[in-house]
Image 1 (cartoon, chains in turn green, red):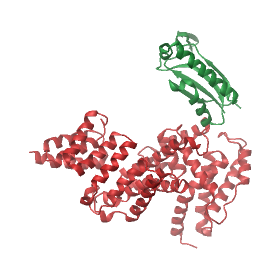
Image 2 (tube, rainbow over the protein chains, first blue to last red; image 1 turned 180 degrees about the vertical axis):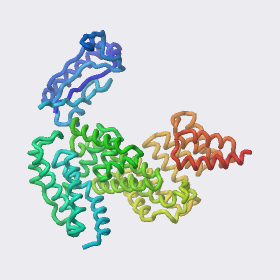
Image 3 (tube, one colour; image 1 turned 30 degrees about the vertical axis):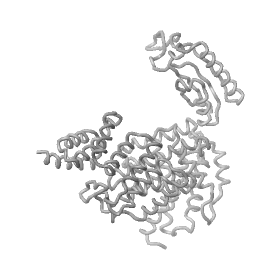
Image 4 (cartoon, chains in turn brown, purple; image 1 turned 45 degrees about the horizontal axis):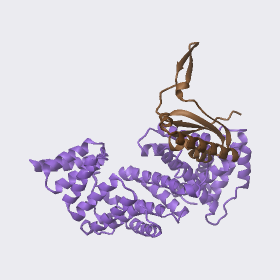
Length: 116
Length: 416
């Protein structure tokens, strides 16, 4: 089964980190990513620019409406994701718990609808 | 051949005993909750039809499983591929290999299946309401209507709850297995909590609630059977048995609640007390935990032939232990009541006032109720009346309301 692991955190946290803490975090992410590649769970993943760089697109009655920012103001913002292959939810949540961001924010584990 | 009425009662008993086992095994073989329930349902329907005419078979379980297996195979043949996401070919293979239980007793695979089932029903990915509903439906065989009635929820709502829970298990890939050893303590705690919730729901409602308490006790017994080395499983069963033993004495004919100190102890169920005492003792020996300590407290009450003989200092000491394990304002409240009995109402009142000031139990009616009781016993009528009013102002069960209103009237009369 495939799952999308959505990494949410209050963006403000990143700005309160020192350079050293930031670098440590990046190193942990690097190690984590390598480990799930090695275990053949990794299918993809990316870090996202902060929501200030987001643009929201809606099409209503044939008109495209574009707004600056995320789809909604939320306490925690989507900062990145992993796409993984896992045998079941237990394996997926165990992987999610190892994401460095899980200590600071929330990881939403979403099962992917398999087409076909 | 048995007369019809007796057979139907026996079938009822057989249903109670076998439903959970059969469904648990079928889920493993078929990979689908719905298919398993359907097959089990059909097997029991056929039994209801055939057994009154043909007599109850020598091994009802084997008959039921064999029949359910055939029904499942029929269902699989009809479906090329089903929405459940399961694999019909694999299910067919599993069914073909399924051992028919011989005439001798329980074999391990069947017991493991009920453990798989209960841990799956109580998986943390499901919310508590869903856990409770699914456990009662699949392990206890209660109908949707029965569960809905027990929790005072419309049938359709409960039906939806069950459907959504099963869909989540399927779509999110909740696995059908017992947890890894590392996860066991937390996962077991969730299972015990569900069982305890079911018990309390039954314990706090009147006669109708009895069925739920019985289901909880039955689940408790199954868990002790399947996990004999776990002390808290024993502790919970002990607690439920010891509490339930008092049921015959808890309500007056008019439906009013009778307090522990006023109960006719000759009405207490001594078999359950003995059972509970033994379980509490063995639990504490293996390793004390919150449920077994609560059971120990209940045991102290059970061993007092009348209220005056209650060993309150012992109860206070047990609450001290419980508080260390599980610090909580509710436990502190209960301890304060015990302190009042052991050391005097002033001492108890001091603790309650402190608790009240901390504001950790803002909507819990039992706190002002306890204060009211102590104030009443100290003859402080006006303060007691106010406290009773405070208690009534918060949401309370009907039985408690009647009791509190009566007390309020008493102290108001004295205050004049």
